[in-house]
Image (cartoon, rainbow over all chains, first blue to last red; front, top):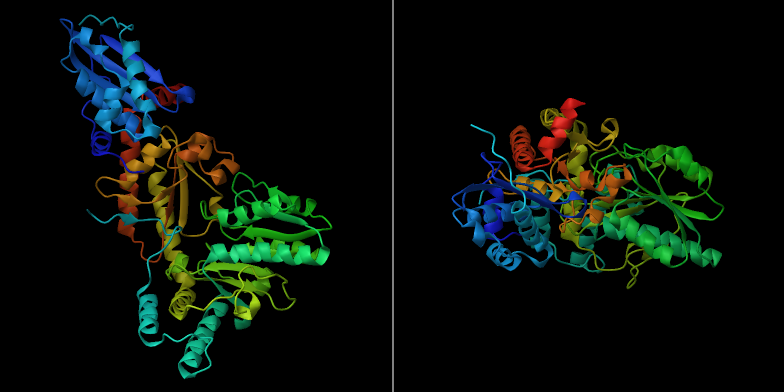
Length: 123
Length: 401
């Protein structure tokens, strides 16, 4: 399969891998049968995303989508987050029609994160 | 872009220099049609006759038992449909065919075509190592079984079938035996009489010959009976019409002679490399070797990797720094239902069948290739697992149990 440059670069060398601590919000989404799983981790300060990171199991497009979402999220106000939609992700990553589900995966993981507060452990 | 480490010799191989040189000479100097009766035509026919002997020698056959084809796919089609058509014409009705679920598509598709034309087909299962249970085969023979078609060496996992035992059954029951030898020619010693096969498909490009040429061995005594599938001039004893391509044919012959000249030594070297590759890779947790390792041809190693996505695994190892040229059991679309039917026949889950790599070595493979491949695969598997939210959980669960 031939991937777009965005997917190729982010798949080979993602900038936001792992579950960076501390975590204030986390959201997970998966396709049926766990064929692809995406988990986002967000650190929030003063209503803004200070740091975002991700873990993903899935195809290169899935990993690239997690990485792209973290870049997009970093520095944004929480109130802006739910403006991110699948079409934006599809176009940013030049997703092939067969891969559009990974954009929905990001949307779902983000929606899940907004309802999923993690209590920070005391330092 | 840096050249990839080529470990896909079961898909196709590079031309050997001796093959290229034989073909070049032929292309430059001998353009006549071997079917022509004039001097240049007779020269071309002589070249083809010499090549026929070279190919026949590699399988201990007689030259007149070699029918040139465009490759193993055509040879398989000629054998399977040719025997079926002959049987149908004699018996005035379709009969029964036995083959295995793990055959190459070049056998499965023609057999399916016959099934759609009224033939009954028994699709044999294989054991967890990929081998056919010969006593089970004996149980499915019927009075109108016309053909048994079994591959010598499986193209995905490299497993060698017990052709002699199957041939004994076929002979005792007067059934024609066809063997697809695309992956074994030049890699295992083949003696068509000792093996007891009636029809044997061969391909040049799997043993460092050119693409576009192959042959079907057709036993003369007792005569294997089949009908031509390509008509138009009655070439090749009426079994395969069409002007012969002497440059392709001499390339095939040169490849056969080369393979026959150092088979034991070369296959021993390749087996050592393959075993070293597996030895290095199996230090990774969650790696499974597919196929019965004791009964596998030297050049093929097939592995499934737990905890990674098949498409990501293939993309990871075939790109980036030190890219590998390897095959996988994953379909391009990564649709789970389309992962390797061969690996699923061994009992692998669709996920493990998809997350598989076939590493196949050849004459030009080196220790450096093996070292780089082992490092690259280990590095990429560890990287993908570290990225996965599932691997951490599953490895903790394994540690706990």
